[in-house]
Image (cartoon, rainbow, N blue to C red; front, side, top):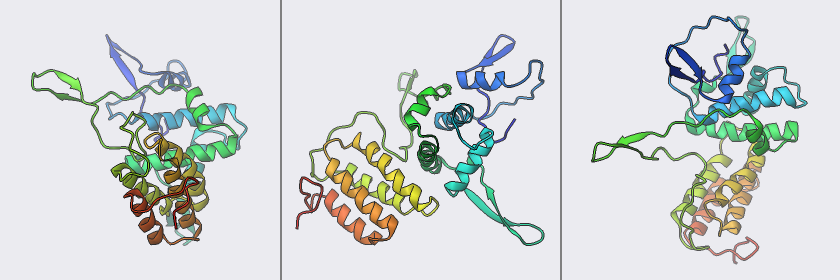
Length: 267
């Protein structure tokens, strides 16, 4: 079994283990009947990590690409997105090794996942949403629970904020009004724009999905988000200084600078 693959998710029954989701079932079916496997309890990986490998399996199986298997596809995406380490052979020749995705913290993996989906779209011509829907279901993560004062466990829904905004409903801020959510959008868009671990051309393409993701949280502020991504693109291609872009966008988020209807700043 490949070390990069997420562990098999099994459900314990009377004297047996059964697959916990269709993706695990597909992986089990790839082994010959009678194969002896050594299993040990392991911490479950996040839903998005399992979904990533389910999408790669779908691409390798059904799309016209140069990838012969999931491992090759995974390593190529890591190379293109800078998830690599440098080293040297005994003779001194410099070589590049793909890092293990298991080494990535969740925010770093979130960035990698978004970039990988954009690259797969360019390679296959298939929208990432379509790939996600057609890939084998990896099952959902179990919601963490916390004891209540009555001693009964209830799903808390709490947890660390994701790297991109949640798609859960949020209060809608008035357009161009000071908003902490706008300031957060500026910070995260600029953090993405200046991430040198991701190739510049990939970051430029990724700004499109980043704007779409933030529109879920700021649906009344499309001109503001367009301006954020426009200036972030300038930072990426070198036509604008990072400090200048941050200063202007932070003022815009605080309501100190107004935009015209076309997303351009007032003079």
